[in-house]
Image (cartoon, rainbow, N blue to C red):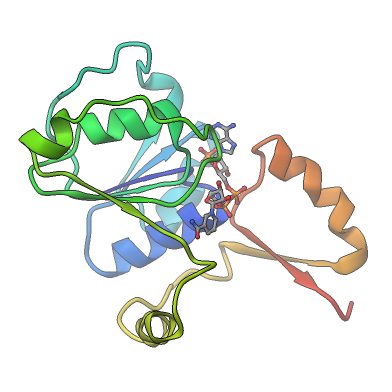
Length: 178
Ligand SMILES: NC(=O)c1ccc[n+]([C@@H]2O[C@H](COP(=O)([O-])OP(=O)(O)OC[C@H]3O[C@@H](n4cnc5c(N)ncnc54)[C@H](OP(=O)(O)O)[C@@H]3O)[C@@H](O)[C@H]2O)c1
């Protein structure tokens, strides 16, 4: 399995959950210096985004990934699509890098790859309840404290720049009472 935007909030939790379910997780990140953090969440391997040649994405490349969680969109998602195994799903969660997707139909019609849209905003309550039940059960994250930092409401402006500059690591929780 591969997770992009690995050090972000979604990426960190996805690594934790997938590794906890027994998958071998490769963390794709722009922050190679955070390899120890990503491994502490359960990543078996850390792949630096700088090492991908996104200028030469083939319609189909070596079939590598059994599944993917993509937080970036753009060329990384196109590269993922071209490197999925037969029948493998990609959960398209985010657009941290780009809203665009320039790919071909080859992965979808020649390898049966599925591009699954994730929309947590309009998700219906019965689905939410099933997900919450699993998050409290077999999918329970094991490293929430490592992946979470709490800031008081008044300190919010100090963390915005980290999000914009992609420096953020894990999920930031805002304590409204502090
Ligand atoms: N579909 C939904 O329901 C849903 C729900 C929640 C979030 N989202 C979306 O999912 C994405 C991830 O959310 P998040 O909460 O994890 O965000 P986040 O905490 O800000 O993390 C995003 C991560 O993406 C990477 N990144 C950021 N900017 C980038 C850029 N310009 N180019 C390449 N990589 C970049 C960085 O990770 P690395 O340095 O490790 O690569 C960063 O830590 C966002 O686009 C968010 O809007 C969607």
